[in-house]
Picture: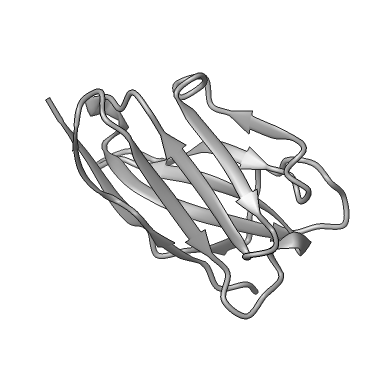
Length: 123
């Protein structure tokens, strides 16, 4: 399985922005559909955004649509989540996820996970 390493979390005021990064050291990220999930305290881990292998297709949870943007740079083996207009309810641990696939479409089930990065939004 691919190893995933998230970075970029932190504390931000409501209305602010953060960009999360996900690195895939030693593996070609181009072989994987990638996604971002989040888990708030006491809640289940929820899908946030997904991107196909080529980057040509993306999908977002309704709660972040229009505010978050997932992207990838296959040459650098990196995946990103740009979060704008952050709200307190976006506070959670954010996880990068990957799934090796032959097709070029967004996945909703993944088998590789990072350790997570904390995002805290203050009012």
